[in-house]
Length: 511
Image (cartoon, rainbow, N blue to C red):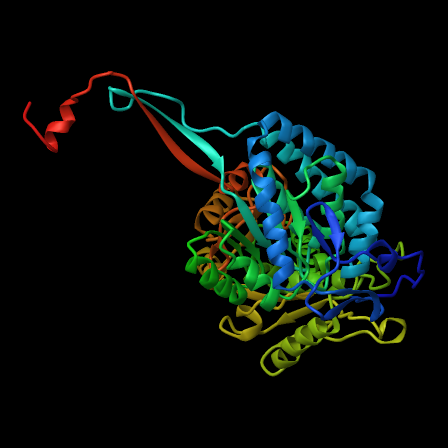
């Protein structure tokens, strides 16, 4: 493992670009009114790159009011009109791709190759997908189900959506929250994580510049305790969508259910990576390194628990460790960097504490430390491989959210699948085998919202993303996500024109 160099081409000029504030309400940037400030810090250097005024409850109220005012007009737009606006939106995002990639790398520490080739193109594609989906608000076909009536189903927008997005994929999560909501005719107030607001603000500005009416997309940047809870509990918010930890998700659910809101939760994960003894060892090792280290492991679908059938176990550990040691840590803006820092020094220290505690009961094969030298000021942590942990240990059961992979052996297929399911979470998993019957069994029996076969991590706009168990409920992306942001109405027409209907006698009179 080596440092590819610390070349520092011009970073994104955040302080200049967002001088008008970190709120976007009714089509205009604004400053927060909480009276408190917050800093965005470049995790690669530890330096402050943007300081802004946090949103308070008054800002949330203003954003919700703007969304409520914009709702009737946007809901009344035809599907074709909303689709056309979203197509323009995708075009504006594509034109601004490089700025979006640099802003995302600055605030998150992601290597530019990840933001340029994954985060930004995925967001543009997602926008284009929902432009098409906007024209497919379909209900059940009309029919005479009672014999005397014609019934049909309408799908209608819900109203103002209040969403909260996490810091690990700020741009993509903004898109996953905003796009299905507005494609279905809703308006939205999004609260991004206060440490990573830049690309959410850029996304909202792009929506307005594409001709989406003011108030349809609003951003309030504040703390979860103040701005987030006020947004979730707001009486004019009809639906809440939250992505984040399971612990915070429980709090969001508690607040949302008090006002009987529609609720969508995408929560934590602890994805198993199950390698059967007939798997392609080289493919599995490469997949494990990529799946465990994407976004420095700060991905709720990242491979975190590798279960390897005994005949391949030692070779898998050796090969995966060797590949991890080739991963290049460095400046996210340097062309040779594979892995950037974690989101913050606090998160780096949290990951390091998990690994340090594991030393008491397991073996750290490689990694397990923060690099020194040129990278010492950043929130870096070396790719880490751990073996020898028990199934019920903290390192196996808890979500670490860092570049850490734990490898455990198993003997029978029954045991491997049982261990894969032995966690409170159920967001994603993968199975590695050349046997179609084994693969089919794994996809049936692993309790997760997404199961990859012979790969781990790829996502596409057309397919849903969401979990089982403590990983939450509801889907992002795909037509399944689109449906979540609509409410169903049954419409029923009498076809008889008879005043005294036969069924009335069950209430009064005789036949």
